[in-house]
Length: 154
Image (cartoon, rainbow, N blue to C red; front, side, top):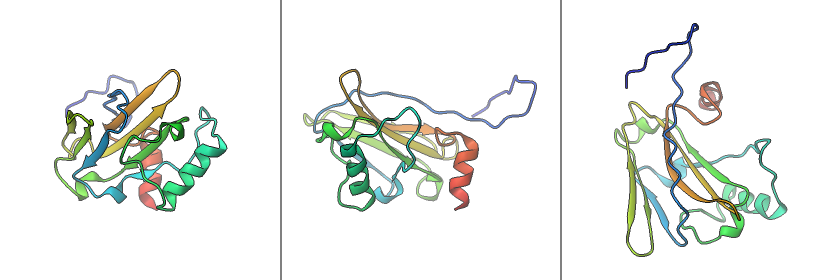
């Protein structure tokens, strides 16, 4: 990837390929990286107003008692449920993420981990938005380059 910085100051490249696929009830997710690499976002951004039900569902995911590999519990996806995967190049040169609809239709996102070494999965289901962004390839986490660096330093 070649990018020219036209700003007057140096800045790191930060890019996310933002593809918002429609939510398909009972669709399943799969990918060619280990499931445990997709980590639930544990912080609650200021724009998110969590409900008790949402907090409990997130806790069950963190404890390994629930997963989000099938879109079958929309009542838990408001507010948004977000997963991150970092340093994809440690697992594959060509990450591939799939959303498979019940009728067999398969959506695929494939990219080079040399260029886009992070991915975000963003799920939201409410009265206005029904989104299954199953793979958003990026150069860093959505919170930005420095936030990703801090996470990677842990």
